[in-house]
Length: 342
Image (tube, rainbow, N blue to C red; front, side):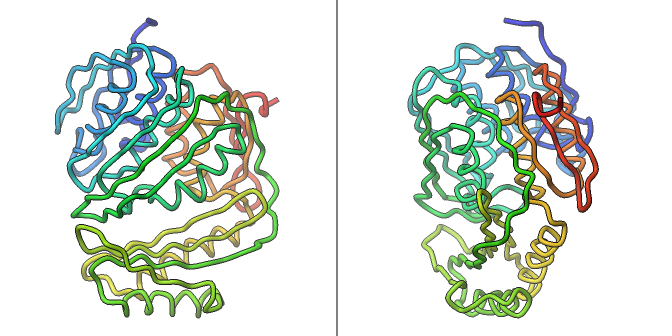
């Protein structure tokens, strides 16, 4: 076991991504870590239930010794053991994001000695975290291009605040290889999908009305899916397909926020991406950093780097001896990793 790495959770954007990336890389490298000032820049600092679930999940797949794993804790000491595949089941216990728990364990499990099946129960469509559809339609296919076999299945939707969703992820050990995403291919398909649980159908129809007016989508490319979930919920998913890359932009319904506002905000985000002329959106850019670092190389063009992105780069470089360079381009930045920095 290597020397303990001290991680300041208040650095950069000071949120949960520092925790998740540090846990994943601790398991992968076998290096123990001490995380302090966890989520110090958030209104409720320290571990919340979904962050605690990430710690517990990372510990479960690596037989780790952990100190400070409790709701509200701002200091965690994590000493990983041997990485193990097999079946793992994690119940967040709230509407906390299943996607963020998967974000923590998926990269390490690609390096496990055996295939894995991971079941996570909690929220599947949460504001401020990647919804299931983004992981399944945008992120997992790119992992596939890098050599991974990751299969995701949504067994039950879970919306904030009720939760109760369930996601199954099956994956095999893989050696990732670099890819480059620098060319912005023409859009081959655009679609909009509204997911509703325990809400009137007209909510979805109003959202799609705004989308069709703003983006010019045909009726055939717009759907409303009413699903069975423990609580009410609404997600609007705007999908753009290009050769080799699919982007998913999501808007979430909130109490007191009109359906038209939800749709307009999602359309604004998609239009910013399309106007920038880059192949990779802001959220996908964050997700790709760690796999490319583990692959030893990669390059992509995206929107201007957020504090979230630059913080994640800094954390990765605490564990891995890999160069990561950002260069301004028209419409955003180009991020080069490892061998692609040469």
